[in-house]
Length: 113
Length: 112
Image (cartoon, rainbow over all chains, first blue to last red; front, side, top):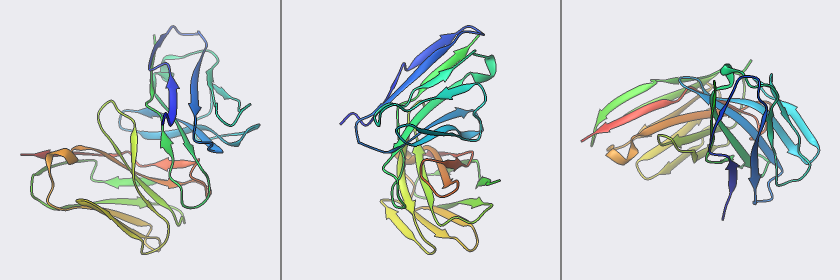
């Protein structure tokens, strides 16, 4: 089973460039989320979705956009990359409900120069 | 604002020893999650604790939840080198596993 698949695994951007991080899951999960992981900070929630067509902001949404047109896909868009967005980005999905954990993708390591 | 604090953040221990690590959170929640992360890798789910008094065990790791104290513990029994990793606890923010607030993580090193 593929689970949660993120692409690309590594990316270098110049300041001001835009890009989309891709996330796809094949588990028919309704809930999907994006987190960023910075050294010593744990993971912080950027945006999340509880189903196709429904998204909302997390703790650190500024500079990022999301959309959810299908159950399977939840892309994260960086509109104008800044060095402060250098981080490792994780996508997660979960079935929802009280007893389910989130499953994480392998991460995308993004460097903005 | 929900805050999750882990204690300690770094731990170096000898193989065969026992140790308990702590996770405190600041607002009411009935659900707490423990994850493991190896260097450069993704997060692997270890435990989902769903109610006050919940206790779960997997191998040398045992996790418990006290919702009244807003405290979870992760107890390591007879540590082995393979347990070396970073351990995160997380609490759901406003009631859903799609909105997790993580602690900063505890980096565990088990020495032979």
